[in-house]
Amino acid sequence: MESSSNVFNLFGPKQDRIGQMPTRHDVAIELQKRHVQLVFTAMFAESWSFQHRQLVPGRHRTRLGKYGAAVLAARPAINPKDRFMVTVGWNFKLRSGDGELIQYHPTDGYKLCADPEPVLEALHWGCDVRAFYLFSDNMQAEDVSGIFSNIQHPCSDCRGFLEKHLEQHTPVVVARHRLPCDLDPNADYLMADGSPADPAIFTAGDLLYERWTFGRIMQYHNFKTGRRK
Image (cartoon, rainbow, N blue to C red; front, side, top):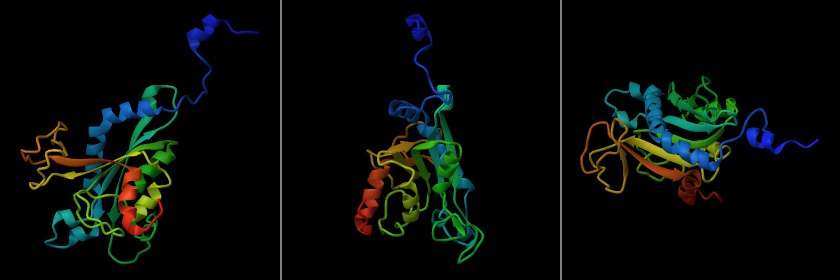
């Protein structure tokens, strides 16, 4: 028996009960809406992290190795409002040297990086990672490639983990607090309230961020590590 065209036009084609996955266009629109939210979420997560080096008297706070991460996750849902969620994570290192307290880090059992946490939470909820944000005021050369980037990137071990769950075109945004020497007129700045900042005027609380794709970050660091992709 054939269905009436009027019924088809009214209800549309049959859909699976779990709903539809967001398209790339949907992700782009959602990311544009949530960009500031994701930057600030990663920043607040960084404030929750713990690094044992902060117990060392006189050590500058930008050398504490504190990181916060946020992920824009997507999943199939009937209601479009339920297709996106934000997951969050932060790093902690309880003590120096070897230990058996934490077992998440690929090489250091006593250390948990911020990068895997929001990804693992997104996977727990049946989501795919559609954008990755990392915030840190720590400034140092990358552990393997030796590259000193303007804003910290995921470490080598974390890039290896992210490679399993992010696509080459997945947006990656790295951010930190602005310094008085950051005067690049072409850089991307945010004021403390989330509005665009004037790079010629320094204001306490301003943020500096860079937009990447995961594939570009891999190429940027793998040039010196010798990896093939």
